[in-house]
Image 1 (cartoon, rainbow, N blue to C red):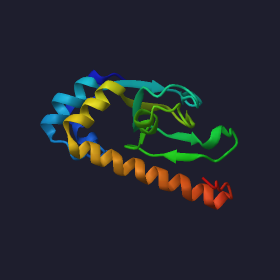
Image 2: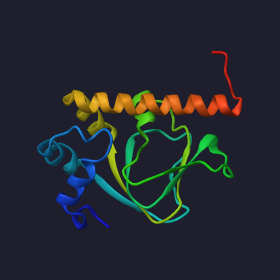
Image 3: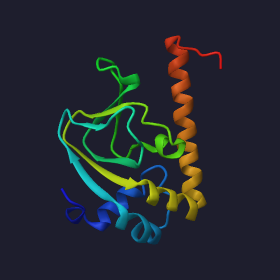
Image 4: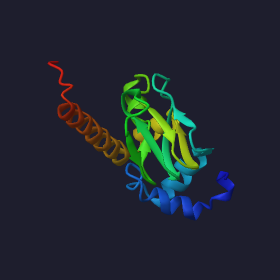
Length: 156
C-alpha cells in the first residue's frame, strides 16, 4: 500500500483522531504533514523498531497490530498497540536510543514522519508540542507504574 493508494481524505480523517495531530487544522495536516508522511508495510514477525537503535522517525499505526517488547524480553506479553497509536516519539525528543523492540503481530501499515518534520511541526504549532508533551508524560507515568508493580524500583 502506498501513500497514493490511501486517499488524502482518508489520511486526513485518520490523523484528526491521532493524539498529537488532532489539534492541527485540516489545512495544516494537508500542507505540513501529509506531504511528509511515508507509508511502510510490514509482515507478521517483522521487527519495526530495534531496541538500542537511533530514534530518527516517529511511527503511527495505520493498520494491523504491533507489540512493544518491554525491556527486550522476547517472551514478555508486551504492550499491544491499536490503530492510531504513536510509537517512537520518546527517542525523538530525548535523543536516547530506542528503549524497546516493536514487532508486527499481523500485517501492518505504518505512517512514518522523520525527525526533521516532527521537530518542525513542534516548533510551528504549540498545540502539537503540548499534545506530544502530554503523550510523553502519560508514557513516563505508565512506565513508572509498571516498574512499581514489578518491584523494579530505583532509588534515583
